[in-house]
Image 1: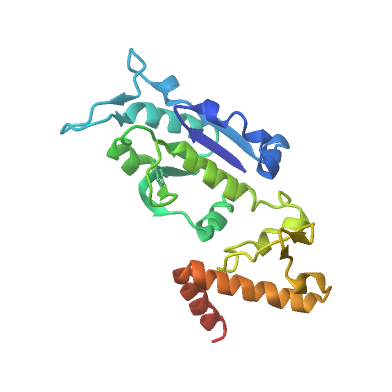
Image 2: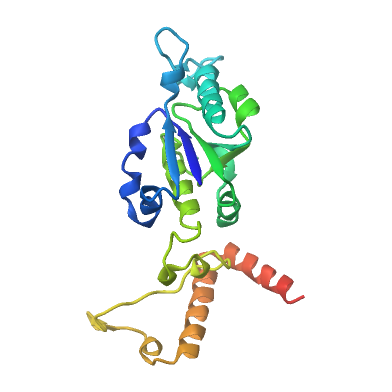
Length: 236
Ligand code: 6GU
């Protein structure tokens, strides 16, 4: 799989290959991570990538031309049909189902905006999907791009070991994960739940499933409602 990130801060992605299992996938060339700086494409004689907003107001807006030319350059050296994703708080909120669908693609072009955003006509002409990672405001789309890239790469075949199969994740079945414990058995009078020491694998499995449901119900009631609805559907 290939990611092409259009960003004013390409250096932010330099160390990605050093970060854990997703970095290793880049290091081992299972994933190609490229960056493109719109500044290199500015036709303006000062190399400007932003300008003042029509109608006034604070902040700057990223100009159409450098972004359009950067995306055209990516497509010219790869695929004309690669999906273009633009990160902004106005986008559809990212979830695991979207991540699973994105993991089926061969290539994603990720546009990380800065300032107050990008010229709306660039979104209309080039962007296939506008994506947000939650209801808060970031200073730039790069952090959102990291989030998406990490979540997608870990689903690719062979990236996670057996012991951390993506099948067992939170959200893979719509529930939060159960609690985990490792040695020592006692910490400050807190013992590891008895059942986990029992060696009774059916009971352990049942206990973990109960924990997943009770936690989801307590912490994310809306997610739990969704889970119950999807279970009802399966049983029909
Ligand atoms: Cl994708 N971008 C920015 N700038 N802020 C955000 C966001 C994205 N998602 C949530 N807040």
